[in-house]
Image 1 (cartoon, chains in turn blue, red):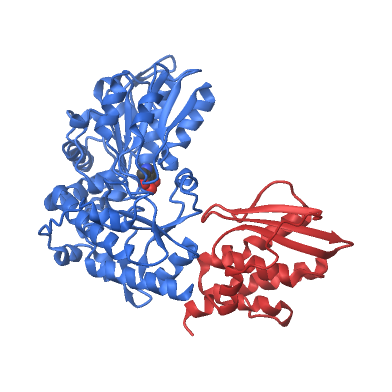
Image 2 (cartoon, each protein chain N blue to C red):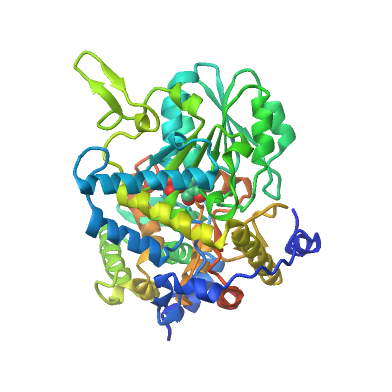
Length: 423
Length: 147
Ligand SMILES: Cc1ncc(COP(=O)(O)O)c(C=O)c1O
């Protein structure tokens, strides 16, 4: 496993020093006025959820106070306005992912629901006894359990691509695992537990040689990396609004139109039908076929505004700035005695997972909290990753573009305090 | 003293680093496993009960400083106690860490856990071993959880 010193020495982090007016950006986020135990909030739990800019909050308020009504139903003006705003948000998502068509963008509740949707539609239709579903050893529980449930139901096998001690996928092993029984590959783009960026384009190319479709879990990636679903050639891509500076309760499933068209619906109900009689129901066209019932209209509109906000800064600027900040944080933390990083991949973004020898992550979290620092401690919904690295839990700092070097300094100081308490 | 100093008192740090009665008990007649799914803390309680009294008690597991120290101090306190006394102690301990009452004299060393009441999310760390003990007394064969 590589040490922090080696990570820096390898020169993987370029000092780009991109021009980002972080102080001004921070003013867009009202939460930074909050004091935590009288101290400024240092929010380093962005992998769990991100903070919301005022424009997103305003959009939600605007919807409920000016446009509120149900969509796709009424002829009245409010319903027209709501429908238009919601469908406009869909187009924003389409452009954000560079999807070919807006009907390939399905509004769901979250990544979790997106993956369950694919498991229940694609999985139910195509996975049979003796077949295999391939995931990786660094998946979030939401990209493990739906496949386990499916495999159990069908008598299929769940296969796992192993990772090395740095937390990188072993592509040679992956290649060996692909075979004529493989029905689907489901991998995370950017690992929430390790920070690893997976070579998804290569992974997809390899799967396609076996005519196996690939689902990419973009829960973390959407906020930190530029995503182009056509360039990746992925078959499904999922992300959650709340990790992209948008509201909770709204997420996106992208799927290739032909593939989605060939699948049975997910949930039955209103909006997903074209006509219903007691004898036969004709399903609606894409994307509505997969959107039964009244959706999170305000959430969808808010997500569109969050995408506007991110576009204004530019994901390439965001990625460059965050990369620089991550490199600074890595450098500062690696000098701390007894601290060990979990996840030292060559390609990383946003996430610094670490353990301190002799101190449980939970105690680290409590002490940092007293300093106003929000980090996540625990297994990060990735218990198999914890088992792989033989740790019960880690502390995880995850940065976003509104974080600063000063905040990293506060973190480092607080970690020294942890070590002081647990001498 | 700050809340933090109150939580991480010397005696708690000491017991978390050098837990007492930290072993399997070969002649235990009751055992239970506890698990806190939120933070992954695991504890197993081994208990030798004779005529309603704790003849011997030990624990194994992995967890944070609070849960380890709580288990260590609990096992120290309970040796020789009756089931009735244990019930009262747990009630008092629970009230202490949830801030419902201050330390009673019979709690003894366990009174150091009063600082936990300022940290609601850590209450489960302190009580996991006690819940597990209860399961051990009832000798439920399955894993208990604080949830
Ligand atoms: C990599 C990854 N996948 C999936 C999820 C699940 O996202 P959600 O809870 O929004 O469905 C998360 C959230 O933590 C994640 O980090």
